[in-house]
Image 1 (cartoon, rainbow, N blue to C red):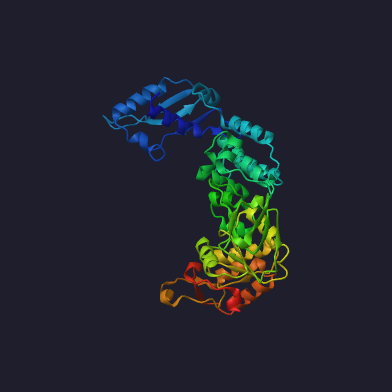
Image 2 (image 1 turned 45 degrees about the vertical axis):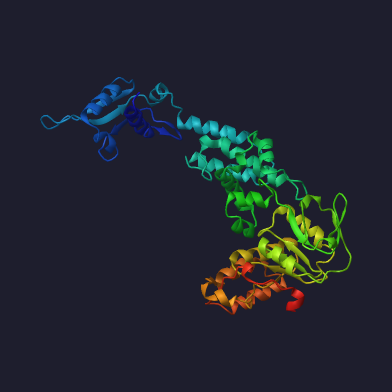
Length: 413
């Protein structure tokens, strides 16, 4: 069958193939608007198309009755005499049958996820209306269920559980080592989860690969970096005081910590370059923890172990960019760790590097306020919110923390 015949039949069948069943009979007018491509064919191509259509059963081809002398006689209408048999003759599955099969597969699918039944109803509603669900057609149900396997694994895995690197996990779930590396597949996983995520996580993890990294799923899992003067308990005991620049360790190896003396402060640093510079230039007894921007889930559990015995006894700071992302990370850490974290070198009075100050873009204050509003229950963040409120109607210069020379909170105070 030629491409022209397939195209013509596909347009005809759209008129009769409906979600509630195949229309048994229909008369379809062939207009130069809907079938512009047909009227644009040369006469020999049209003639070949006519012959092919006339040879098909369950179609009655009706040509124009009045045409100018010598003009080509086009198809005026097509009468479908038996819609079901026409589709069967072309090996096509009726839409209603296709939907029923998809619904049977959907009904049989079970995932150990609290919101699966609600999601299942939403999928059924979209597919019954012949729409996509999060960009997935009902014919792509296998892709949707594969993504749900990953969601289930994330939901069921414990914060303390070791996370296989991406290709190992992909092989475990799909027998395909590279499936989780596909960005569009990772984005589908994010879309399926986004309604259940903390707002700060959803806003900062704005694509699928970032969200997978947050849950520890990456090609090259990164060890957690921090500096402290203490004994770290893993499979053995590590004397951290011997390490000037800190240590990098897989978070699931951290079992406990014993302090030689109470540290003077805790400082979270968002940026890797700023962390490395800080631990090289500042040599005091403060605890300095690199968060990798938005810290992965396993890191958060390890951080809880590290700071548990001192978090209520010493001041806690977070140093990040003075922008919406940095403020969201500050708010998330305060809520997730449930401690009052003070913004450090990123508040209203943060020093702006004078040599490049004119080049810094302004961040609307309202955006900064929205970024921390969810954590206003913590005193330090509430104070920052009030300071920002006094700057309403203006903007604050965007400050990347790498632009600022590190300074210890001990010196600053």
